[in-house]
Image (cartoon, rainbow, N blue to C red):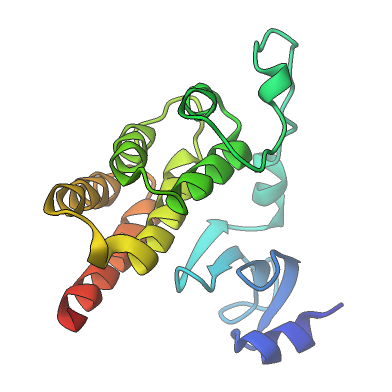
Amino acid sequence: MESIYLIKEWELPKDIVIISDNAGERFIAFDYRQTKTNPPIILIDMEMEFEDVIATNFEELLSKLYEDEDDGSNDLTKLDKFHDSYTHEEAEKFFKTDKVGIIQEALEYFCSHDDSTWLLTNMEQLVHSKKADFAPHAVAEVLYKFIESKYAMESSENKALVWRVIKQLSKHSDPEIPRYAKKLQMLVDSKKNRG
């Protein structure tokens, strides 16, 4: 119902109908620009400045939805809540699970703290996560924030780590991830040009 307002406010394409939004950072929408019937479903990420087709039609989108079932065997019940702070040990336990929301929150927490080497090393490992399919997405988003706020002040070793993570993202099998990597490369280049 708010598509017209959001399209104007965020300068989105005109021939879309928004299904979901994440406070103006990400939008999921029907894309009517090429067809008037059975449109594809797209994801528009304003922060990463990219757009991608996530389903060829609404039926495919529905078939991709699932409910995460917890069988109670997970030993992280006391850690399974969002925190104001994390220890390295807590975060490393999350990184071995499929709890992408908490993985991203832990990454963001450490992005705003001083242990960049630990953070970047764990990001590098998370790119290849078999447990959490969306972990590389979380890595790309947090790495973008890291580059924006910290890259210029980092050691040459940590800058090399950033490049290794970007290189791994650029080779990822999900076609969306290499697009993130290209955006990250452009951001690093812009930081170099300013410095």
